[in-house]
Image 1 (cartoon, rainbow, N blue to C red):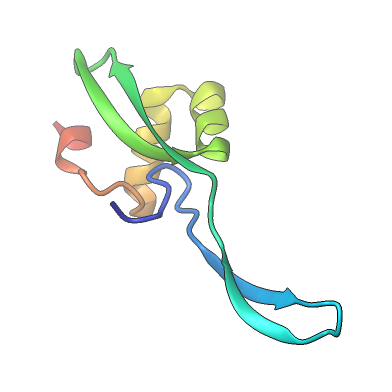
Image 2 (tube, rainbow, N blue to C red):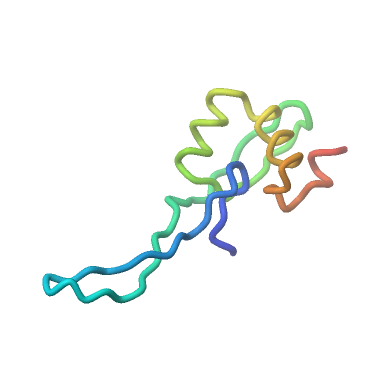
Length: 85
């Protein structure tokens, strides 16, 4: 499973760990991802998405169908054929 949100496209960022002596070593900042199942009323089926917390707020704001269409148009959604059917 890749660590990318399927709704917003958020993924890991790189940065530095900074110690007390100001020595810098590379690290990653991961997105707050989790797997959640949604009932898609328009297609009458359950779908499972890997989404971030901000992606969940986007679904709550726009609705599942509009959020899926927006994510598919931006290229974030990996299973596009279920959206276009």
